[in-house]
Length: 327
Image 1 (cartoon, rainbow, N blue to C red):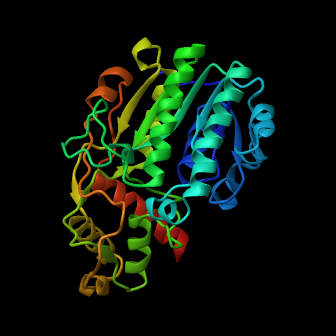
Image 2 (cartoon, rainbow, N blue to C red):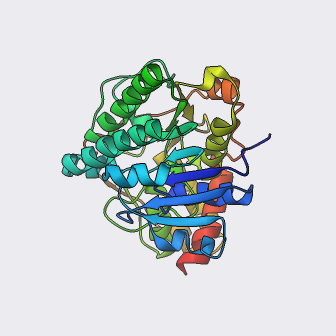
């Protein structure tokens, strides 16, 4: 695959989990990368290894500031928009800030890209847009009612992207991420994602807490697959890719009970005592969907996307990274 190279690129949220992995890949294939981050949830340690690279720059600012958005997108070829305030529970507790960042910030980026004639915008959407739609696997054209303020913001992002594409002829591609995990994902805090939180607890000899009975399922997606999808979207010459949105996942359904069994087995190779840890269960959380599984046929057909790393292989890679960085 001929990925983009020798381009000037902005990655919003570039110090975050997915953004920093994307920055790394873009630098490795020879691009000039500007990380745009306000460090609300991003971390300097995620990008510290890039500071000595002459092709990397940090622009510490906020996407809620229109002038900063316009300033940093001037003369840029491609923007990858990864900046967002994630977490369904956090959006339920603080819908206003979620709206400000995820909708107002996204609109600022759209306007800045339009005014500065940025060639292409790739943005992160979410599987949360499927809401209460019951059918599995999830197909891009069939979404339901959103179940959280976070889901609302991602639906609005997709609507704004289509309107800007239609009105102004912009090249915009949306990627609906499904439960991304991997290196540099933060295991700390109230709103940490399940996999890094579970890994850290098990490594400490403590039981993970599952909300619900554990039979709920997710299409867990290793971060390298997501990075690959972004690179494919940026380099695609297929006209059908433009003004479109794609599921980015593994196409595998894994229950939380099964996930924890895999983690216990993998981590027991490093500490046999982990095998004896019993899971804890608590009440279901508001806004959580029961099951999630993506159809990735559209991304395969139009973008050439294939997930090279399945769930178990991704968990092995993740554990290796956390063992090196948490101990």
